[in-house]
Image (cartoon, rainbow, N blue to C red; front, side):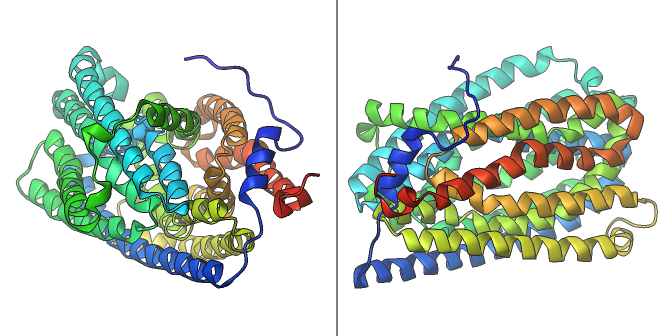
Length: 476
């Protein structure tokens, strides 16, 4: 797939200006106020349900990490963490269809057009099903052809035996998960993300029970992979059946609802999201693989412990800002400018305060928390801890602005900055890791991110909000 070169611009491109002029028109009256209150209620409800889901997920992670670490040992645990990171790195395997579908559904919902929502849902389900089938076939063919012992740099006999079955289990589970992402995107697009979050709670509890069972039965590594990835598949299927047959049957996917025009639209919207997801994965989610490949799987342990400890910050920020994406889309479609601008500012400030508070607390208590969590046998360098704390604060502060731009489909500028960040970050990490060690990884991320993404993205959003014609709908 090829495209014309993308270059940064000193002002938002004309195409974006036209879309924003149409979207950001003044809206007043009782109906608009009622919609704003309902929108706010759904955002808060989704945020609260997301908080519960994240709390359950964190509890599951806190319990499962020491169990799997002590059971698997450093080398097999490092391989387990690297395989788990593949699930995050490959979250773009739907080619951005999920994110494009979320945006399309939220905008159709803003027009109160449930018929169009059903067409988007049917088309998205068909496209995601095809992608999942292709991914399964690729996994079955490709996994046996790769020398996973060399990829993970394994030395133990047991780890060598378990590498290929573990990767095959991961590949098949991941392929099956692609079409099941539809239900989450649709629920979030309709500002019913609280339903998805409640089902995620059930999924996390099922994962914990499954992992505990696998460890107690001394299951091999591929058994742990199935225990970790299998329950979410079952829960996602149940969620889909309940939602489309009992809660909103009028938008249930049907083959006759598949539209080639809507498919092209979703693919076009999803294409830019896909590029953005790929570059983000390379820049920020490849560290475990880089460390494993250059220094060996055993060196992933310290990094993964610090990463997972500070992942609570990302989880908290996620339940605050992710519900804003469809809310921004629906509000801008209706022309509710005041709510969008006010929420953008408040969301940014709130994210900074939450991330900063938790970053400071976790840093000060890091030694104590790791000792209680993992035990006395693991000591994580303070430089690595401080780097992750600062990185999570910086990352969190920019997230609300990213949700705002996503709702506007203003992804092109984000792609430019992300591409620059990915190229520089991965190159710097590969070159500097043997010289500076694992503790330097988050600091390299911080420096590159601020230079190529953080500051440019902040300026871009500020430019959009300061231009009078973007707010009033009048020509400049």
